[in-house]
Structures are given as structure tokens and as C-alpha cells.
Image (tube, rainbow, N blue to C red; front, top):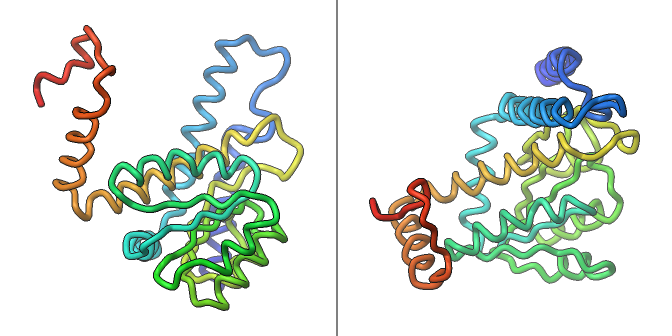
Length: 231
């Protein structure tokens, strides 16, 4: 506990010197200044997230996701949108990822989750009531859970052992947008996808290339940068 507490204090102290994730620009900034500030904020969010990664926990999360017949994603609001690209990438390597978002049905989905599936919960606050109920249901059926949440303890971290931490700079409501959190979530999902991809690298790469070449026939370009002749 002491080690975790000191790590969190160190993280929060370092974050004070970075961009304000809640109000990264003002009405007086011109568009180029805003562009630079958003770029810096998102770069800091990725660096923050990388610094919070625990190698052992990350490998555990990748193992859970890779082993599962189905990955069930439960989240709220725009976090569901962040998960869409992960679902798309995983589909291209024949991994079944299901995003549960229909209001009133997520608890049924958790109850009906297959025994050889797993769950990925995305919750910045870790306190969303509907996700708390989902986690309780999943645990009742011994479904492995990977949690993505902010630093510190919350009601979700009390229920899960495999926890991936998100950059934690944003307040719940007083902000222009969820720039930092969205970047952190997307980055972590990209890392998880890459960790699964590298387990069968040659086959997955061949699968993606062959499928795209056979199906995406309308994707052409005269640009030398985009030219595929070296493949």
C-alpha cells in the first residue's frame, strides 16, 4: 500500500508541471496555438499512461484477452466509442470482441457471458453504478476481468486484480473535452491489440495483408508513399 501511495503522489506531482487537461486552451488562443496545445496534451497523456504501465499486469491482461473466446467490453458514454477501433482491429485478426451498450441490457449481457469469455471494463472514475453491477455479475460467474481506470482506489479496483491505469488529469465535469482520457484509453487499447498481435505475428500480418488485398480493391493511390509495390 505504501509503495502504491508514494507512486501516486509522485505521478500527481509530475502532472502539475504539464498541460491543464481540463482547460488546455483559452478563448484568446489562435488556432495554431490551440493545435500545439492539444498536441502537447495528448503527447503528455501517452507518456503518462506509459509511465503507469506495470509489465507484469500488462502481460496478465494480454493473456486474459488472448485466451478468451470472446472479449466483452463494458463502458459508458464516449468510452464506448474509444473501444470501437479496438474491436475493428481485433476483428481483422479473427478475434471476437463485443461492445455492450444497449441501455437496460448490459446486465443481461454480463449474466449471459460465456464461461470461456472475459470482460474489459473501461471506467475513468471507477464509480459508475451500472458498471459496478456488471462487475458483480461477472465475478459471480467467474468471468476474468481487465479494468482500465484512473489511479488511486475506487469501488472498481476493490473488485479486480488486473488493473491498467489511465492518465489521471481530468476532473469529472469541469473540462472542455476528454482529450487526455480518450488519448490514454486509445493508447492502452492499441498496446493490448499489439500485445495480442505479436503472439502470432507472422500469421496475423499475413492474414491482414491477404484479406485487404482481396477485398479492399477500391483502395488505390498514385502516391509513392502509399505504394504497395515493395510487398
